[in-house]
Image (cartoon, rainbow, N blue to C red):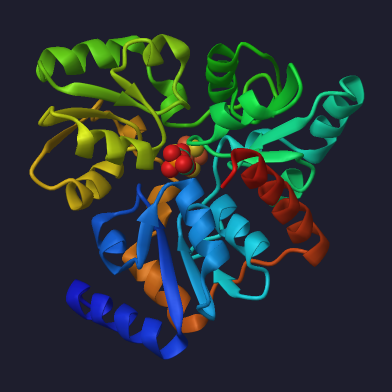
Amino acid sequence: MNRGSLIEEVKRLKQERNAIILGHNYMDMDVQLVADFTGDSYDLALRAMETKADVIVFAGVRFMAEQAKALNYDREVLSPDLNAGCTIADALDRETLREYRERYPRAPVVLYVNSNVDVKAMADYIVTSSTAVKVVKKIPSDVVIFGPDYNLATYVERMTGKRIIKVPPNGKCIVHGNYVPGYVKDARARYPGAKVMIHPEAPLNVIDLADFVGSTNQMIEFARNSEAREFIVGTEIGMINALKLKVPGKEFYPLTTEPIARCPFMAMITLEKVYRSLRDSIYRVEMPRSMAEAVKEAFERTRKLLGD
Ligand code: 13P
Ligand code: SF4
């Protein structure tokens, strides 16, 4: 089927099945064009929780689809490709987290949403890149266990002044975790005057060179409200699609065009697979109800703390 027919078929199937497509800001342009909502991890989790649609197709990596299922258990949640993992999520298992819990029994466990669902079910609080600093500031404890992203943990440590026990000590994003200060220096030389936006999954020595640090939705807001016309995008390269759609009339340049700028897991989610997913109800995201309830409880506790 050609691209135009695929797009038409996806739209028809959405209506027929009372389905919605939630797409992460990093998706290919075609996937963003058929999505009902695109956004960052926090925004999409809220959309998933609120929807009354019968079917949710989650165009993003697996932990995001799992989060949607945990928050809205009675819907059919589909992941176009269950192999779409995440190096941060895969860095932490239940056994390791249990050991940290035993070693620091009084420290609350704060998990980044980029965690596999069985591990996330052990969290006291669940945060995203847009909420992590705010949440840790509000938690009534000066010491917290935080994982699995090491860089986000160090950023939270700096911004809150609290003691952050990092679990594991080496969880990294395959994209942001490989950023180096030279990328920012080269990009500034290529595009003088452009504002540099960096995701908090990047190392602190890269963050130090940014004009703005935030989640993908926060980058959209920053670009929209800034007087600047040009921006260097220090996050996964698919983000440029979201910025072009949501902030028309401004210019966006990649921080680097090296292959590491594209997340291989996000890239697994193609228009063709979204179509197959809707057509054949594949792949259903499943988990025990008790696991989903534990995740939802931690997420709700976090929202309450935020006053959301
Ligand atoms: P946000 O969209 O929440 O900023 O997350 C980025 C990310 O790396 C998701 O994989
Ligand atoms: Fe995980 Fe990084 Fe890919 Fe996001 S971009 S899914 S954090 S590996």
